[in-house]
Amino acid sequence: MQLVFILEQVLNGLLIGVQYLLIALGLSLIFSLGGIVNLAHGAFYAIGAYLTVMLTPTIGFGGALVASPLLVAALGLVIERFLLRRFYRGDPTLGLLLTFGLAMVAEQALRMAFGAAPLPYGIPSWLRGQVFIGDLIYSRYRLSILMVALACVGGLWLLLTRTSFGRVVRAGVQNPDMVAALGISLRPYMTAVVTIAVGLAALAGTMMAPVTGVHPAMGAEILTFAFVVVVIGGLGSFWGVVLAALIVGVVRGLTAYAYPPATEAAVYGLMVLVLLLRPRGLFGEQIARFE
Image (cartoon, rainbow, N blue to C red):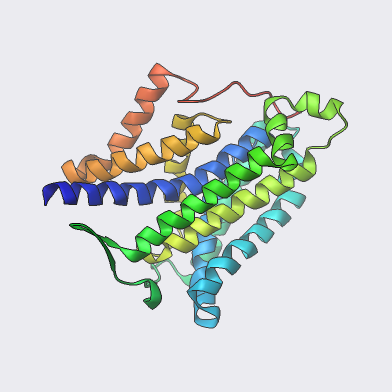
């Protein structure tokens, strides 16, 4: 029974890991291609969760699962077009300050609109219950989250590796000057990357709303760990971020079982260890600046 309980903690850790993963992949893509550290990325996660709470009474959780990421992605498209685009060629510090300001504005706007207290949000009735795998009993909803996240990661990998869009994005990450010499503008690709990244963050917020609750600071809380995942995995490495997210999730899950007070410290300690042994991260590569 103790082994089953440990396995359950590992699965719970993987659940947290895929939550970080959906956010970290977007962070990595935006920075690798555009050179902007998007501190507002967690705000899109929170907005996605709040939209889910608002839309569920009208269109149900299934409808909100689709509509919320699409609406937040549209918001990201507007922000990229009128704000982020101005800073691709500028001082990275300016982009950092801009996204920090956006994050603060978004969090305070959520507080003003919905209050500071957490909003209750339950698991939809059609996803309640448990799944029995031998002696292991696991939540059907949590298992559904893992499956959806797996599908998203697989779809994004196919987009980046099996399409002409992905080839241009990968070339823009590795050598933007060469892409420009070929007469290809990276701006529309950057717009698409931001839109996809923001949509994935909102999807994570939508799926995790019944698990973690919905409150204004939820974006800021998860953003720190998403950056840890990006640092451990290595900028510009798709599978590095995926592996790092899973490792971080499992470390959190096992530490929460063995010694709960050290849960967060274990994650930061893992990051320090990786940086000492490999400063670029597990699979990080040297990336040319976006010029």
